[in-house]
Image 1 (spheres, one colour):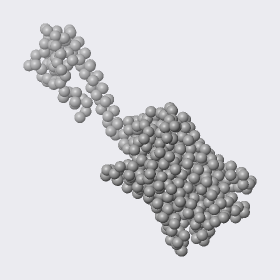
Image 2 (cartoon, one colour; image 1 turned 180 degrees about the vertical axis):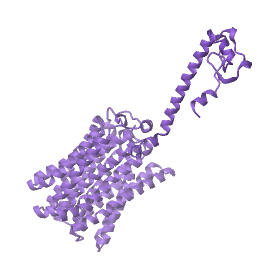
Image 3 (cartoon, rainbow, N blue to C red; image 1 turned 90 degrees about the horizontal axis):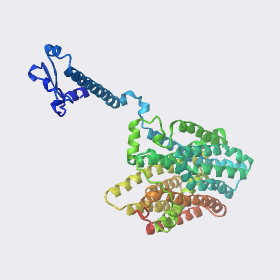
Image 4 (cartoon, helix red, strand yellow; image 1 turned 60 degrees about the vertical axis):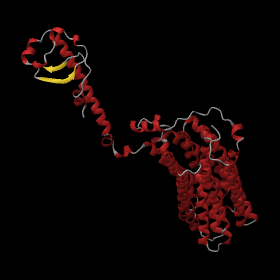
Length: 515
């Protein structure tokens, strides 16, 4: 119904009739058409007869009637403009092109997803390129382990610092810096390798500095852009970019090396960062309030559905470090990442040395475990949410999921020494990685369970322990291989998985312990 129809179908409350001269009270019987609307002056507006109109064209009644009519015309004009505004809002979908109707918050999510895709592409390409590089430069296994671990030197430095920086200047600046920084370091890797080992170690550490800020910056920007009801889906998509980045890097690196030589991997992957950065500068903002092109409807949706948390001014370090579940999280993260980072950096070498796959086969076969992880992570999240919705406590669910994330990889790694065919070895590796991904619903979800207000601090603490596992585990694997065998490498990982299982089940909780 239009505003005009609504206005003239309503009755205003009557005012005292004395506001119009008592000598000129309207006579309803003299009206040809009577309006159902009462004027603000208390009389019902009517269309007077021609004779009545001529007789009263002068005097107070005519002035009052004209004033009332002018007021009503203004009201009707206002109503029409209001109708136009409502109609324009209702017809916004047809007025705005379809590509501009796509939610801007999901543009931000997709850009973060692509950043994490590049992140792992640039990280895993060394695990493939290290094979021809070590042959060219005569590196022994210990040197290879040192090179692989040098990435984590820089990665370790920016875990907590990246979060503080993102909270201070905004996630757009920090994530943009990280992608540009690690892309330049990737492109400089062949130059550094030819200059000498120290230069290569420094460049790889610089690359770790850039990638270390990615996760805290992403968490910062998504916490402002994504409503609570969509946060799980958005985070799942972004983190799946890491798995698919590993798949992409492992799949394309052998082809590039075979066609153009090993330096082409670093040049081509590094150049992709400039394309991403151009899109990021043009499309991304640290918060929806800063985006001048954001549609009002979406801005209202984001602002009204994002929980605004009070900023943390002081961190109770003593209280945090006095809680056993916090230490269970830190220790378990270390035990988990030891095995995960070994698989990330050393598996192509394992396939090449033990299973006798050539370079191309090593890269393609390495794709399967990461695809399995992408599937299992989402499956584990669905199972965990279902169990919680059916009444199982969060503590029990977290312990179940993380126990699968520990014991599954431990079991399948122990089977590697008993299998005789390459196909079975690849299957065991895929199952190991697949069950490892259940940790996404275990320890990786536990930070917000036990301390939602300090979850960023806890993530920095536990992920620092996880990065240390990458530093020591990757380097130790090279040392073990020089003095032992792959069975010894897997035995260390299995032992740490078992330690993590015991610590997690004894001391972890899904209840909030810090407010």
